[in-house]
Length: 150
Image (cartoon, rainbow, N blue to C red; front, side, top):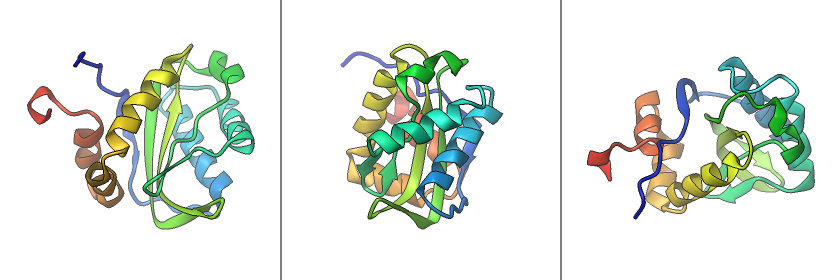
């Protein structure tokens, strides 16, 4: 299996005790975190909301992966993800979401990020561990496994 680069996750972009009024609020919070860590310009938040209006980013296992539209890739400064955990859950078009993994990617970088995230999240044990994580270090080890973890 080819070795992949670790997911671009800054520890400052992990928030484990978030709460959101609704889906749009949760997406906007993800976008603001990506802006805070310097991965995207503020207009990227609206592009994330626009993407959600065209197609749901819910992927199952109480996880959504909000990301911007292709047109917004020019306002992305560098590839990054953020992880926001909503212990109280967020209604996501009739599905319950407790974890949002926001993505900002230049070019077609989002394809690699989505693929790597899907591999992790399709494993119910990994998805559960992400939902139940209480320490930033747990999230980092799940999404950025070292060679010894693999």
